[in-house]
Length: 267
Image (cartoon, rainbow, N blue to C red; front, side):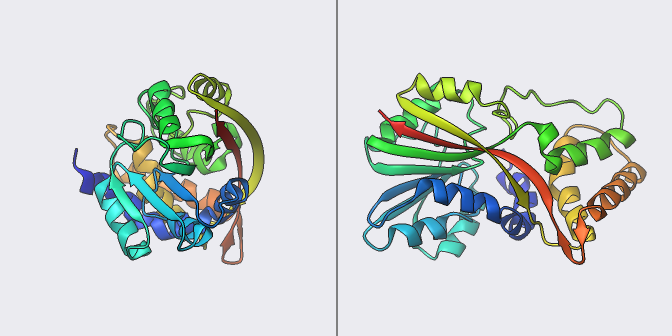
């Protein structure tokens, strides 16, 4: 795996993604209610947008660990946190954590990519103390999330037969309907609750900047393995710009989103 190549689009768009997801971060931290002195694991922490807030919530008496499988993303997180948290390169679904090490686990869009849900959630259950909690955000269905459906529509208007992802396999929309997640958690020692939530994403504008974000991150993911011409990419970009302009007010862009906030207690 060429981790540098894989991470490049995420690193390039990290500041804009952090700005876009502020309401999502607020939702996860409200549900988590982290307290001073707690030991917290941040699953799929990426470049670390939630690490600093978690560290501030638990204070000097607490401890925060961030884990991600992509080393360049953790390198960026290390610069952001300045040594205030412990960082681990690894797969949270299989990593050999010390049993009952954590009081809480948070995961902002970080639990949809496990190869084996049952094994992963059992592993996380082992890592948290009885009565501890898992708090995660996951995307709702694609049709309720223009952040994904709008770029897909633009791509489909220009390029025929683009492969569709398996919505039941590892990927951002895996738990768009949360029944499978509830079953996986329940079967591995968790008592889960799921709260659907409508909110807004606020990527930095103007529309041209949002278009650049999608052309750097979202569109290449959709077109992975597909041969396209520069003319086709230009056409996709123009459609994206038109669509993003519809969400623009001045230099601000607001995109409706539907997510699920998952709170699970370790039995």
